[in-house]
Image (tube, rainbow, N blue to C red):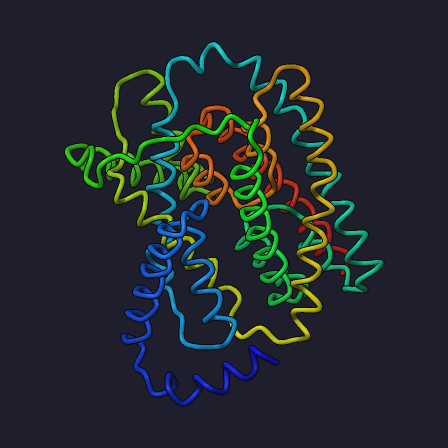
Length: 357
């Protein structure tokens, strides 16, 4: 009722705005929401702030629009930033990282199967929508593949977007309130720190993206620059850490883009796909708790395991890990491996389903 009332209230005010004004309004809203979250000392303020602000205005139908063209560039810069956190010491950690990576396939399988059973048997969704809503992969990839076999694209967007948002919020709250996770209280660097490395950052980001596309690597916009940057830093022939203001800008744009996914939410969708996304995310926490308990009891860092196995978006979880000073050289390979497995599995499943329908 409240969303419907606010939608009617803002209708006449925003409907006559030209497209350019809407872009400017959306950007200002994202920036203002970020600073409000920052001064309220919310966790991950530069991403959660615009997510909440743009998400609210998107839900009431007015007039948030974040352009799609800057998003791949943001992901490429994020990939370069993640890779810059790798160092020569990772060469001595292959066995440590390898053991925990073995848990990823089982985690993805249990999460996907339990989610599929809930959506198809309890929520009574059609098979195609249930399958592609259950796979914890990239939102864009799941929507594109799902649409081709008759899945409901709006439902796919809302379920995956809800999963990502809920995971980010829950992980942020745990980091904020659980004292033994080992979060570092990092001083914020100067906004233009490392400005002289900007040409190298741009080169690594674009070249990594280009090579990943040519080699048909899954998630090329983020994984390509991350791999190239990581290799360069591990073998110490490149130094490419973006300016802090770039890192903030990437968070603001990605957070606002995520908020825009909740455009014009109806009461039916709130009690359907969004509720389904919330419940399936809570279901996925069960295997996460089991893995967390086992690996932390054999000596793994609690914060690293929490962030490595949280089934949120790759970009969002890496941003969260960066913001709290977590072990990026441990966390990033887990999300990269999960995305790689999911996209390969989804591709095989997609071909199989297309043959039988």
